[in-house]
Image (cartoon, rainbow, N blue to C red):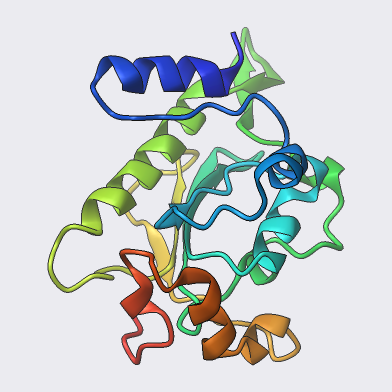
Length: 198
């Protein structure tokens, strides 16, 4: 079953209204236009350059997580005018081949082999869920906009820091008026362009 349809069915069973669209981001935009009735977008993959396309559509707050090829999972949050943007975090000059996910070297029968590590994707999903829960706690945002957990180490420390836009990134020039035009009905609109930084 298509992932979008499977998730929609599961959420509907929990009395949460979910609309599945089993197609690409570009197909969604062509069919419905820019989504304007969502408070948060979740850019969870980058096939067909979806992250760049989302960023160019003046998104509301973005929350995502990703895995890497070195036993790691990381969390990201992007609030316009406060944090960096998707293009800072995932530059377009990074080749798709460099974005191999949920992989790691594993010792098996005395030999090191590359293996899929599905628990990394589950943990990345948990990071997104945790951020959505934090949205309902006073004082948001309570943590920096980037965190990385290295499951290849002792897990004694989580890397976390506030990522800022590169000097040449177009998000530095995003007009608050333009952002308001596209996102004024969003529940978390007031967080954008605020002085609150971690």
